Length: 343
Image (cartoon, rainbow, N blue to C red; front, side, top):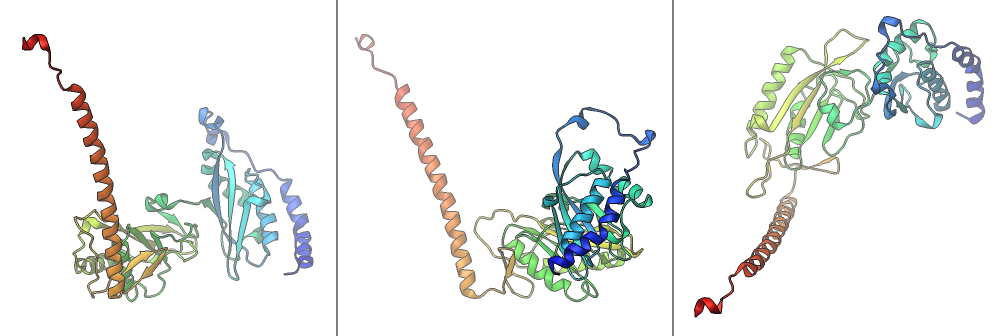
């Protein structure tokens, strides 16, 4: 889109934005007013908000302008440079940095509902047939501890210890078992990690159709595969959970499948895990390597032994220093011969 068209599009919506900006958001009813305490007087902290289901028909500058005015209606003033809009052909979302109190974030759903009912938010801001999603993003540790997720929530990017799979269609019946072998084996041979099914590569939560029968079949499948690993993987080495996904567009039960491989315990000697099909995988720099060749496996063992040797050398240095200190203390405490006692 050319700068002239963008400017024209912005001017087109300017009267709407100005008219809406003059309408303040209704105050909280007296019975729902938040109690005044010391926490409200605390210094605001910085949070990152995820805003989903934006209208992809508008350009990034227009969406940024509309979103900034919308956040002001929700009593969240934010600078334009703190709004990052990601626009794709079929969807758009934004990441917004705001400085506010936790209590203000907690009341966001209520404020958004009231603003929508009072028609203070332009319906054109939201994609057709969707509802605006507005919530705080989570870090890795917070993701692993969630009991439920909202559809459209942004979970961040994939990392060395975090892998996302969309898992649509017949994924659980076809591709899932292959991914269990690859990713669990790779996580076991590195520092552990989690495979989340029902999350797009971009980090957006979608969920997969999964009823109780599907859960039971999935658990049996995972257990049977991992028990055939060499060395055998015991149940305390991993955790399989199904996180409910809340969606306003469907009543079908949706879940995010989370398979977490715990950090392997230190062994007496380095060892590589191999799958039930005799394949070995590694996780490096956020990608899977494997099946590995003989030379790669030999290099892995060499690096592992080198690391273990370095740890032993450090222990020897520490023990040597302690030995020298003890010897020095003994020399200082050694009794001195007395001539009068000898006589």
